[in-house]
Image (cartoon, rainbow, N blue to C red; front, side):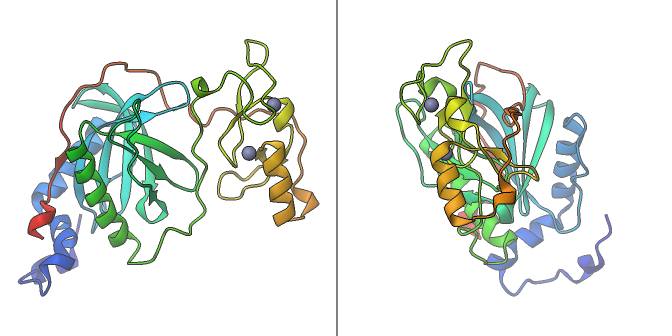
Length: 271
Ligand SMILES: [Zn+2]
Ligand SMILES: [Zn+2]
């Protein structure tokens, strides 16, 4: 990694503004990033000029079938996560979301998902759960700061994001027609537009939702009508019966949650 400016660091005029840039130039930061990369099976190259690893920790990711333990790494420009193979040592199935595409939802504190919040992005949106209120607060503070840093102050709240998929176990019957009972023969599907669990009969239609996929995706009849109203482009209709229900296939279960506290490399209060 070459840094043209590394000799001109000196006194930063505004420590507050420059905190993340400063962190990105530190030797510890370079080591930590290399370390994360080395622990991932088939990692992308995470080393990049100007990039800072701000924090890392284990969060429960609420998935289609059940919550799964995932290792999360917050950088000043991307959020990286993956499956935990060996706690603290080995990760796989690396996913990377640019921070300027991410929206953070309000805290969720339901009985089954305490200390949770929604992370939305164009391709995928999901709920994650921290160990404690305090840990969640730390994540939210750092996420907010890094998202603002990565988007250069632009408001990301209007970006198109994916619907959060309602977990399968939340529905015994179709959430659209409310009559079709799910079974081994009557499979559950997800409307890509609203995220509801619906039966095949209620989701025969396909619609092109460009931020999700280059191909038209499964939508429920209500959403199809709504989307078609918004955009009466007939070419988008595609009746091919191709269930693409693989969007949550990011790994196997690791049932028990190791309560390793998250680590952040900057103390926000001091910045
Ligand atoms: Zn139905
Ligand atoms: Zn829908």
